[in-house]
Image (cartoon, rainbow over all chains, first blue to last red; front, side, top):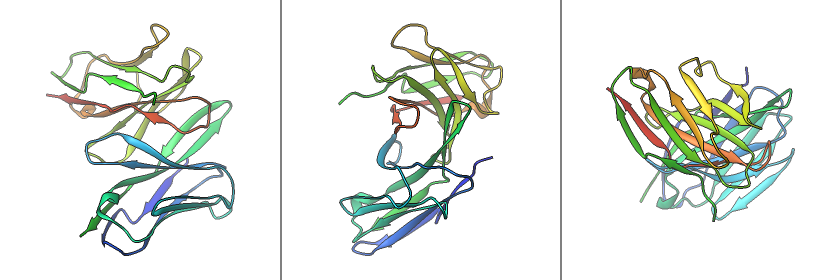
Length: 113
Length: 113
């Protein structure tokens, strides 16, 4: 069974600081997805990482993928309050033509002014 | 920008009653999914649907659940006899291709009393 784990589960950080969220998954996958969820809202796609070594950046967020280590990171640079949200990584499992996205446990980020 | 729409946004029902949650995926998407989330926690896979049939379903998706695409635009999740533990936020999602990013609807908050 494919497992996707994130750490930390909760993160409280000061504005202006840097931090990294980690996403580990248990079986081979060539794609990894990051989503953001604001409280009471839906999930919004942030990044799709397509291959080993892929790096994507938007604003203060940068995501990377190491398929050999089965690890993705989401790095936050100089955090601002607007980044407060829950961040999920997801991995796709394909079996005989079926597709299933497995989500990580989520990291709840709170950026303090 | 095209979006996935879900109705109703909230549904309150009595235990044992049937409910139907409705979704209109993005029009050129071919892959459809239902997920649920309890109290903002883990995003749990329920079922995937492609080419008018179920591709994969989770252990949660037992005989009490039914998915249908009754016409060219709607995608529904029926829970035949609701239980207290079915209370959750249910998200519909769609994707254009089999391993492309998911677009999520705004969710239906189901409360079973």
